[in-house]
Amino acid sequence: MNILFVYPDINVKGGALSYHFGIGSLSAVLKKAGYNTGLIYLYGNYDVKPLLEKIAEFRPDVLAFTTVSFQYKYIKRMLSAVKDYGIFTICGGPHVSLAPWELEKTEGLDAICIGEGEYPLLELVKKLEEKKDITAINNIWIKKDGKIYSNPNRSMTGDLDSLPFGDRELFNYQEIVNSDYDRAVFMCSRGCPYSCSYCCNSGLRKLQDGRYVRFRSIDSMMAEIKEVISSFRVRSVYLNDDVFTQNEEYVSEFCSRYRKEIGYPFEINTRVEYLTEGMIENLKNAGCYRVAMGIEHGDEKFRKEILNRRMSNEKIEEVFNLTKKAAIKTKSFNIVGFPFETYDIHMETVNLNRKVQPNSLVIYIFEPYPGTPLYDMCLKNNFIEEENDDGREFISRTDTTLNMPQFTRKQILKCYRNFAWRVYWKKSLKKALLHKAYYSRYGEFLIRLLSPFKKIVQRQAMD
Ligand code: B12
Image (tube, helix red, strand yellow):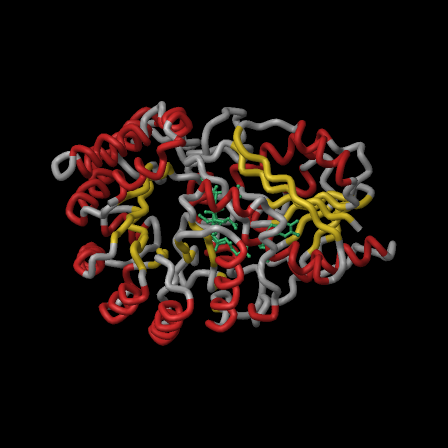
């Protein structure tokens, strides 16, 4: 059996290719069971031709798409283009897991996978190979003769160490590392302990029984990192977990072993509530050079009531300052264009970032994802329509699909483009100008133009 994974990464911002942890894990499990897997990574502008060429060359029995909401419109076009090819088609990932109605509505789609896919996909492929009935596989919904067979879900995979390491060979992994500032990415965990109202974690955690937040053992992490850095040319490591520093003991042991056994500079993602002084010290000693944390919104009341993020501004300032004091660079994540937000409320996000002065920042425009409380809020208040694909081609999270009287699209775009400038101009004109160019209308063009010098530009903007 030949299984061809499709990773649509069309019209995304930033100019870096990416590894997909989900596809990596699914492919590793299938390969271990003796199946042949392939990948088509679709990057840049939408074009169906590379997919059709890959199908002709690879001759897949199963076409397996991973889905995030923003990519689904392209996936629909691809499915429609291959609907008469006689290939079994399946979608998995956060979008269809939380919007399972897509199965019925999507032409050319035979099945979807809800939640974690390793064992459901393996069972499906085996049954397809043996030409057995496929209508009763847990986590898999099947569309057959116009009828939908929806099935219950198995529990979350309890022991992540029982899964093989992700299949990076499937990707052109060296090219990905090169394009992403020579970083290799890893995840020590799955899941997130929080339920921010705009994030899919709030819905994903409800899909399957069992513990949602799980960590791999440190032995397993060290072994995977060693394998990757000895197989590819890598200069630094990025731990892409939703919240890496959840457990003081884990962080302490990870850091001491990482320092001895790996030693490459690394960066992490975390939440201010989980970062203690002790952890910061351990991270610093182990070679951590950057910590990225979500501020997301600067107005405490708005953040708590609309976003379900309950940390105080005082805590945010305290943790950013502690991190900077330890000479670790900080990066803040921010969002503009939430339902019920106004220009004045948004300016609180600017103000908090001005106070904190992160070494670098990221600003996104809010995108409503089905299965999240904020998506429902947008629908209920007519800020979006249910069929939210208006056919406009824009880069994910750089424009809004919300139509709100109190915060218009024009205002949101202006806030987005001026955000970094407003935060930095008084402190560092160079940083303010570089960020302003990146977030300008011509940002993507400039990224492409400056790509030979992108490491120098990044250093100037983020140090
Ligand atoms: C790490 C991460 C990234 C990394 C790596 C991407 C990846 N998925 O590996 C990077 C930085 C590249 C990234 C990029 C983006 N991300 Co991201 N990312 C995450 C994060 C924090 C963890 C995902 C992860 O790796 N989990 C572990 C792996 C093993 O799980 P998984 O990928 O979900 O795959 C499992 C199942 O979903 C399923 N599955 C997945 N695909 C398929 C396909 C088939 C056929 C089957 C059967 C099963 C299946 O089986 C897999 C194994 O169990 C999640 C939040 C979260 N906790 O899920 C957000 C998340 C997935 N990202 C999100 C978004 C929006 C994006 C971007 C659009 C952002 C942007 N504008 O650039 C891009 C889109 C990239 C793309 N084209 O898919 C959203 C998606 C929401 C949505 N409904 O659309 C999430 C859910 C966060 C959120 N805000 O809610 N992301």
